[in-house]
Length: 319
Ligand code: MN
Ligand code: MN
Image 1 (cartoon, rainbow, N blue to C red):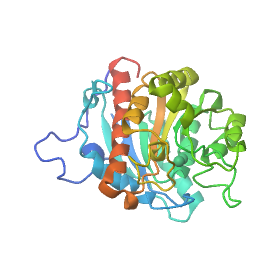
Image 2 (cartoon, rainbow, N blue to C red; image 1 turned 180 degrees about the vertical axis):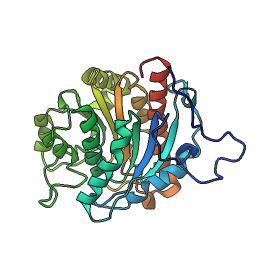
Image 3 (tube, protein in one colour; image 1 turned 180 degrees about the horizontal axis):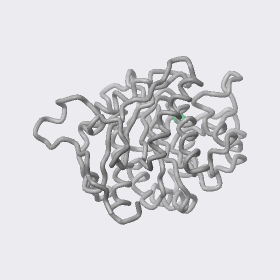
Image 4 (cartoon, rainbow, N blue to C red; image 1 turned 120 degrees about the vertical axis):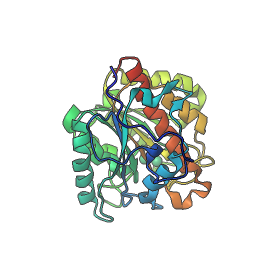
């Protein structure tokens, strides 16, 4: 049964580019009351190992998202017939102060998670997923990770340091936040330090579907594999925009060629209709090198797809 639909984007009485630019023109309200999903920003980018600037990701995604409409063709659902959502604003982060920023992200996310609201967090670099997972696991216990990325992000250290955007999922495993037996990393490609990189993920218990394998099997088969792997586990969906090929998503700090189209990415997300999501995020959008804004628009579209999944699940009585 749908909750009271309290928040809707304003009807089209004015052009979508007008007004204050929140995600999908949702009201900017910091509440969890009668809310099903909350979009929020975690603009921390000091975990980036190469180009930085993803602290401006949330702002760019919000601007791009004003073009989004209520209905998803791919998922066949009108989001706001079934869900209420808010733009919760940004959590406090402190440039150059990783632990303090992590703590702030965990603390800021906790009331959302505890209220049973699904957070959809915009990075920031991928290091923000670790403090998100801390909040999520505190409520739900270890969760399955569905991880779209060209990188594993299970390296042990960068420059001898433990906390960076290439290490969050190793730290998450060490902290007992992940149910890796039901987790999968999808889209891995590019140069590695050695074959031991992928072995490192496998040793932690992840399934790894490399870009080569995904190109061979196609998105339909990959959707089946992800669903089989995850099953009914409580799931955190994390999407690093560098999963998408740099020809379509150039605005990110550590690009890898040989990626996936916007269409493939959208269909992969749309296929995850049966997963038991408890949290989602979208990371690594770097606006200053995003000529034309296409990367931010890709991110907004994928987030729209994620929210549509939640709406479909509510429509089907599964949420
Ligand atoms: Mn990543
Ligand atoms: Mn990546």
